Image (tube, rainbow, N blue to C red; front, side):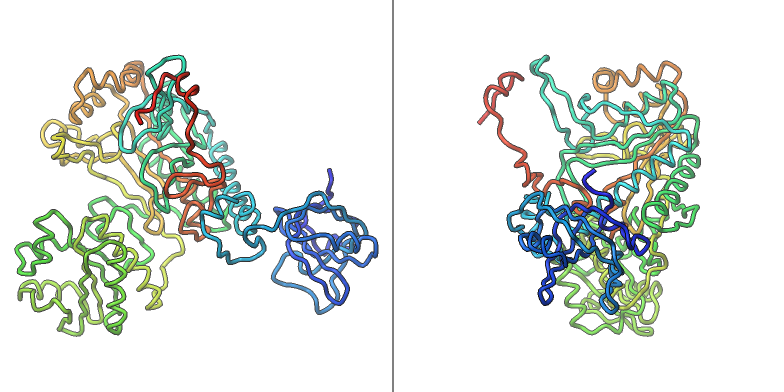
Length: 582
């Protein structure tokens, strides 16, 4: 090995030792003719001091991001020069030999700076440099430690890590598939998996009993801060289990891996909320339980037939009137309220209503449009000092607006979260939802989710009332994992396919291989998948999962570093039997 130690691993216990270090020049300082250089590797950096004339002469050629090999003796820093902000701040290495292993052009942005002004496009184009930044190196290390901890836990629980195919069959459900043409079967295509769903269920039919995989998944969908066309999941499936068995396993996995990777102790078991409960109390199936007092309500019933045209039009157009309560917010000055209105518009809302509750009175620019009954209902629901925001938009947009306002006003008023990480399970989702445009039922989760046993008769009489055995894990208002108990009997699976509008032949064409497998003694089974990118990003306080992925795509789905996607030449297209239409 070229080196004997990592730079960031040296401590006072190494004083007097002869060491050989290798890494990148992080900083250069000349103090009165004595040259100091910080040498960095993935474990951190250490101060080198060059008192030896020969070594100092070579060191003068070093510049930022040069690759160097340094040999010398570990010593204590002189009294008064210690740096308590870094791990190696008590020591330095007195270098008597240094070698330049490679030179570097000036970096397009500073690696040593904590704050970076370079745009994301530049950072991704030079990602190999961006990843040298200590913040990014930490993200890669923590991500590794989280996945390693999950592997350790699941292996200890009797799970086997088994790989499933990347080239598979297209079964369009939800997001679009990425398609791969087959050279040996012209006109036919593989699809990259949106999840290992069918294969992991087949592993249960095979008797593998407990499976897991660090799975790469692919979805051709519109991108945003928490989505990428390719992403990573901790995917697992278990046989001979019920819902509580799966939930208990995941709780133990979270407790174990969060302490190992993030140094955070998570209390368990997690709170359970039904879908009906969370929609009633938070107007969302992803509640942020850190701020329980910030309740959301659906006010469509209250304002049905209202004289306030904005709300009346919203209801008639199928939008939702959602409210957010901010306790203690009624003392806020008008300019803060106006700022919130502008913020709502910036997110995409047409407007935002605010109401202050002071004693038995309410104050709002739109109060005059409310009926006596509407005012009485609002006053009964709220307390003195409450501030309420109301957004009348499509539910996802309204919840996004209220979610951003919740974060801003919690910070503004100093409302401290009740817990740094507030976990909960959401259960008892509707099994199906009716798509009027297609005149058919659609699975709310995936088409393989089982109904609750007591709701099976409803599939014949009233499918809209049937609840599923789906479960979602939510932390701080963000979904981290989703799963369900599966249909392991062919007749139930065929019944659901029929409700979803698949005739016998279409069901056979799309899922025949799975339906056939269910005829050969499929055991009861269930599973779940946890989003690795999202979990690591949240635990590191990052708003975008791109900050915890080594080589992510932009929001346009491009890779500035490699240039992908790129055109291919006509010969390659001809080999797979394709011809561009334009």
